[in-house]
Image (tube, rainbow, N blue to C red; front, side):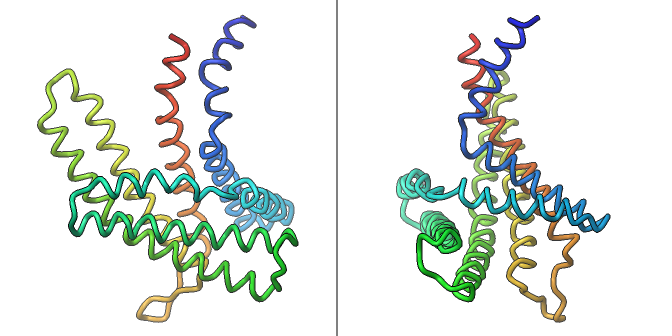
Length: 231
């Protein structure tokens, strides 16, 4: 039994623990679950835990934007046109948002001399830029989903399962951007035409669902390498 547990840990849990993105998204789920619990039962302890883990996540996510070089390379491979421009804009916006978050985090650690007001301003702009990124990502994600659906329709029977999996993940990706946009609108204090903002309960629930989707997508992405190692 002990050997079975060790084999499972080696083939499945270890590859996931080595993924910074997977752990980051898992922490995001914990943060928003604590926030939601604190909101409903007024628990100061849960609110404190959410705040501490959120601060830890920001340090954990430092230099996260380095990985966007792969996204930029993928965008440049696209034929010149609207989709290529949107993909590059997509990458540029998320890059700026993450770099702004890093600057604010370094300010809170005292590495960069920033006043509290400046850090709040940087956080606000990072959130607004991330909201703009989500809008662009909804478009590029929808185009990518349409491509996957065409590939599914043309796939031979033995490739149907894999193609359907990609379509499902594509749909979840578009939904995640919608949820993140709702969360960002609340975080930046943005209001609709009627002057109404996003309620805290809706925003926190959106953040929780977004984190769950991201965790599932990374778990799915890591599964093939885990299976290959087990084989």
